[in-house]
Length: 160
Length: 194
Image 1 (cartoon, each protein chain N blue to C red):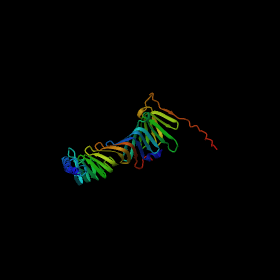
Image 2: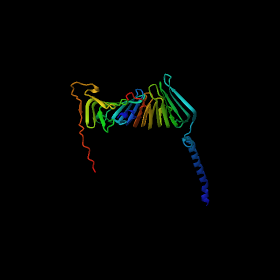
Image 3: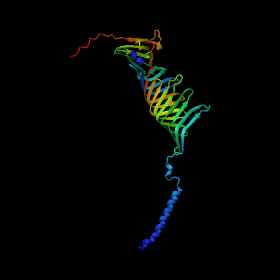
Image 4: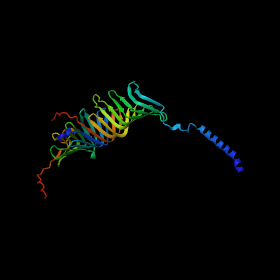
């Protein structure tokens, strides 16, 4: 959702450490980051701050070695979910970048690739089969997208 | 009746003998027994106490001051009233204050007790930081503070609460040990995109 960007970020975890020298905060142990409707769940989260507050979060690890994120879509009652070995989230531009074994799912539609960049503001995402947003020609890693037809289900008959 | 009364002098002598044994016993271990020994009495009281510590190059590293210091010889500890410890780094001074303090071995380890407040003013590129807890054990020479109590900490635009913490002024690192909750506010500003 667009309003997420203006919301404060809350993070819960088992442990945390602030490092003033290189301006970094590290959260460890069932880390749960929330900003508006966005939720990122991971084992470790490294947060860098700028003068105005939250800048960037890098989430790694989690169940099955994958960090997960979930965000409500603008104006729809649908959520987009994603998982990857590493999720980098930029709080200012509301962009989430998923690295290695990346997958995003919205409703039933699913997209897999080595790298996915999801822009929470424009709700567009780019997928590449190579890591770090570069395209690897004829490699066995393919981008797979499955989009289910939204069959116009008849409205459920109103039961008396 | 006469036989009993003839015992009377023997009784007196026995009594006297016991008295003298008792007297001798008391005199011999006078320094152990008695009342005054286990009392916790101060031997020195200093008002407006302050000590500064310097490193090998002669740079001032820390300041410890208090309104009142009461030293107790039996435990070699000192009780401080409203103690204040400040650590001086190149460009940052971190200061801790509290209601009371308990210091031992020449004020090298000071435990701040009650309403402990720590603060570091904003530096060139580091935001202002504050820390609040109930009790904080401060190792003055190593410039380390640690607590097992709940702690709340603010760092520029973010607030953090947790339980238990280790703070190290030299490395500028604060570790919060459990139950961490953080809230990071974004300063409202006009965003270039909208």
